[in-house]
Image (spheres, rainbow, N blue to C red):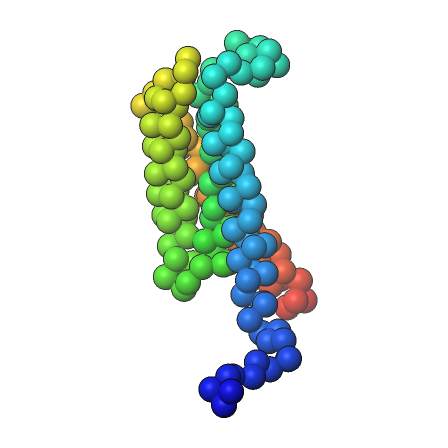
Length: 152
């Protein structure tokens, strides 16, 4: 039994930090992506959603939906990814959201009574760009306010 290794009973706390950081920033992205996937899987939307679709163009809904995804993705790329991704967070977030929008439109081709629409993909990409740039602006503005507060 000399070949058996004894595992230390001490818990490595430093390995828990990055996992919590990843969960904190990427968790909302994955939850929201799951929400979008679930919504795209519904053949006949409930009456409440159908009435909203009659009120507004579905392109506006795509724009709003993906602006939130763009903001969440930018936040995750900026704070819980490598240094290269953090420097290019807007581009990476928008590209990732646009690719997910493409996969969502392809997914809808296989859902009864749904179809993929290239204009929906355009609205998705524009929404992602709006959300990512908006979150970047908010962070920039908050950082400027914090720096001026600390220097006073």
